[in-house]
Image (cartoon, rainbow, N blue to C red; front, side):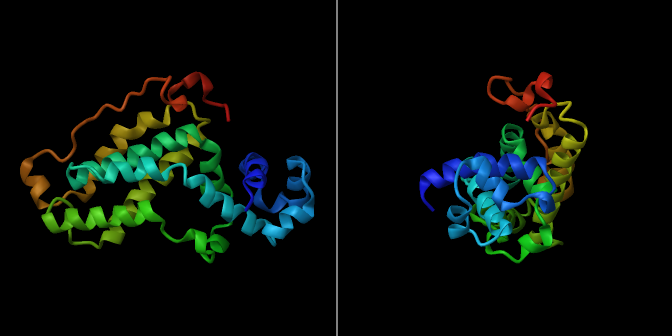
Length: 222
């Protein structure tokens, strides 16, 4: 899709779907707000589902470099899983509208049938790191790597939803220590348990200048 079309549509699609119920959004209104013809949008997207799913994949590409970087270090599998979670917290603190669309607006059953729902590079790499940790005994192997991944996803998804529900009244990144403690003690394997300490408290306090989500004064903002 032409870059100028993407740049004009992206903020409108993000704002519209993060503020409105999916079923109340129509493509003609999006075209009008983006200052382009309906025919231009329809040329690329035959319906609003295709439009939204494409842009979700587009927005998530902003997250991928930071997420992948946490998995390509020399640290242990548990630490990499922990840092992968923190990378997501940082991204969604900066881009809460993307989180609202993904976790609150998108028609999930329909999205699951779309190719864009399938695991992308970072998710596949996380599964590999989990498997590495299981092979070394650092991550429990009495459950599948997919089950561990699902636990990771559930912890993060709930944290984001409750942050929104509570009006973003606290820094999302401020939940990192507690979430990592719960997650890592739940997935730790025998070798980590033998070391006696599976969670190294990182105290992810963030400079407000580095993470807009760390500023409680902006809790209700978009």
